[in-house]
Image 1 (spheres, rainbow, N blue to C red):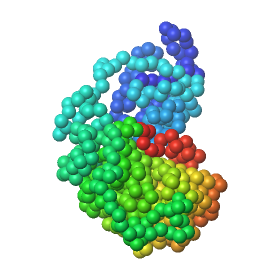
Image 2: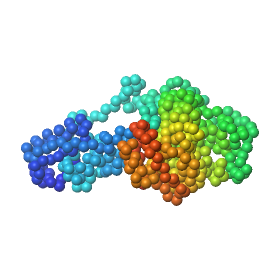
Image 3: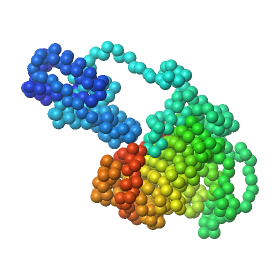
Image 4: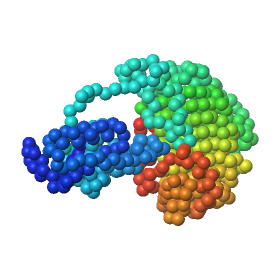
Length: 500
């Protein structure tokens, strides 16, 4: 597939083309496929125009060739180009064409942009020997064709960040449990599964109810929209779904996937979990210590993507987790701060935790959004391209011992973007100025991306070189964020359930 820059070509359709320069540069990517395609195009052109002009191949690299860390779906949105989605394979080569570094550009038809750069035209679609598509299946797959794959069986996208490589239930046949009993059984067994959440699984009342001693804050009583505390300020929440879980994908179908009244506990030893497109809701909303949407403890590889949450918590024992494209909606009639904003939003405090927080929407919350660390806990966090909006309390609450990079995040109408106590964490980097943005290159091989704040409280200046030194050892797991100016639109249109 070739695109020609016609500015130096003369002739009408059907005539022999004449070219005013002695050499024509044919641009293409460096892959063996495009090199073969380019040689084929040159061979056909030489037959048409003779020995003049001379043709040479000019190879180049696109963003999709050079960036091996950022998922393709995210990379396509930050490269721009003439066609979002295909620009990761074409944008840089198109620039060479427009600036006359090349005169012809050869693409695979699958990568061909639907919109061409200015002054360029589609020159030809050479005849193909075999126009059939091919599907490659795993050797141990039960399916031999696309038609045999069950609807909804494929997790969209791939895990990235600190959870890179997580596959969940893999390519096993997807199935939807008929009720909460079967759902709980499937979660707990040792069989790899892709579990479709195609309706509301309502656990409210499934285990009866209990009356117990509790308490409340005088400054924010239940009568004023506050919350009661189960027990005497001790964590005695209800039993959660399952315990140690391995090799499972929980995939919501459309906007139907809801788990109500009970959360999921990924206990120590849990491995290889994907939770995608699921709404966790109504988990004892008026009770503190009443349970979390997802509780993670010592889990090796958890990817939570395009979900909607009440609390999320990572507990003692190290976990490797990515939370991406998810919505933390804090609107509630019962709040620990009596302002209709949920307080106990997301807490990560497992020693040795490695956490990626990317492109999440945090809104109408009043605290711990997120809380990172605890006393004497060492962990690593990369928070990128999150959108925080209309939060009447604090967002980041970071403890000493946490190594964190906060970049490309957007804060709008936030009372306290970061607690004052967070400044005691000497290994946190939020790249507050141009010099600190550039300083990232020495450790991370790229500059950092600035955060953006509007109508917000104080944002401290944290630029510890110790933070960058600590992050250098895990730079392969750090994703490259988009610029903050694009974050609000990308996150609001893409985060949460039903957005895949």
